[in-house]
Image 1: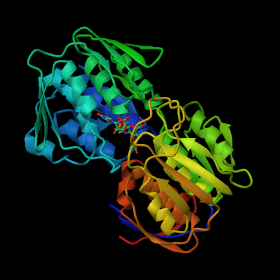
Image 2 (image 1 turned 90 degrees about the horizontal axis):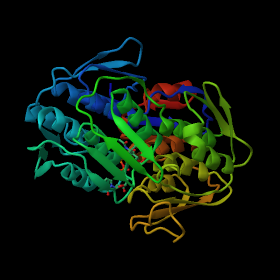
Image 3 (image 1 turned 60 degrees about the vertical axis):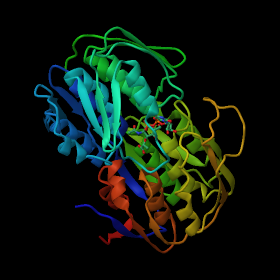
Image 4 (image 1 turned 30 degrees about the vertical axis):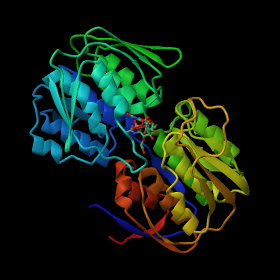
Length: 439
Ligand code: EPZ
């Protein structure tokens, strides 16, 4: 059943345990990689999310047989019957997710052609695909833009290329990896993204027989091979979900043990969490998060890895409304990722968004026009309000704000959360949240 609206009564700390599974942003890409293998693959710890369902369904319309694996959360993918899908079947996925763009390289290798429907994903800026298309053209693909999507062909096959990304884009790096592994010759990728989910995708591809070396300074070399086999892989944990629950513990003054969270991939988040007045205990099977006295203001800047992820800032901003003093959050990755703060202001927060950013300081990647900054002054008591979820991480922060606020809030559009938070309502219940499903 899809739930779209909640009545949430706040003011109660969230306490208890939640478990995070495989990362959405690895699992979906590893699923696409199964198209490249000659034999079946098994992916473990696959989260039950709508983005995963979209990718599964697109694989199925292309003839991949997807079945439950040998343990809960495992899926097997048999690509032996891969074939061209009918346009209408592909069209049914238009606007549902951005991940289908990654089908391009694998489908071109298998079938010599690909059709990708009009893409969706969160409404966080334009989210263009120019880096993807430019890279595919360098591999020798012919790209035709149609009103309903993109048609690609590779009349002479795909060959290795030298590619320098204008920005270390996660998706474009994955596009290059998934295309280069079976292209003829060597590919050199410069200014690559190096997020842990990308390193895990490289591990998946290596298990399949790919030859990929990761050099210093964001350089990746890929030597194309003729065939790849299937893989058996357990996905890296979802560090975005783990950080979300950590911020929820901070905002509501609760205590949450996040099973499956690991320190290594969250080092930068943990530093900021600590500076904001959080306390954590790293344990064998997860991390325990709570407050350590009063919350403190922080200055953070979202960034590519190993910086502070753009997906971590929204739930943290809710906690910062309760910190004593002025915090600043610079968003440098997307151009429209502060819209969610309007709802927090409606609930009583003091947040001023500077649409062109605030400072010219040094950046890991060159400063871009799209920067924005939010100045959050606290502590401000939050009160219940009627709010509409704008996107995945912004929506999560709205729910957490409603749980932090005094009184009742109506939060609509919560179905978006099923894109990135598995069993979200069950987890809220387990943590003692007080809410009703309205519809
Ligand atoms: C991935 O998006 C994630 N999504 C995002 O998580 C995450 O926020 C983002 O990486 C950054 O870590 C998935 O993995 C499915 P990008 P992606 O390409 O790959 C610009 C979530 O909530 N750009 O690294 O689409 C782009 O506009 C989601 O889980 C171009 O200009 O992100 C942005 O400003 C939301 N042209 C920047 O690069 C292009 O062709 C980074 O985007 C591609 C990107």
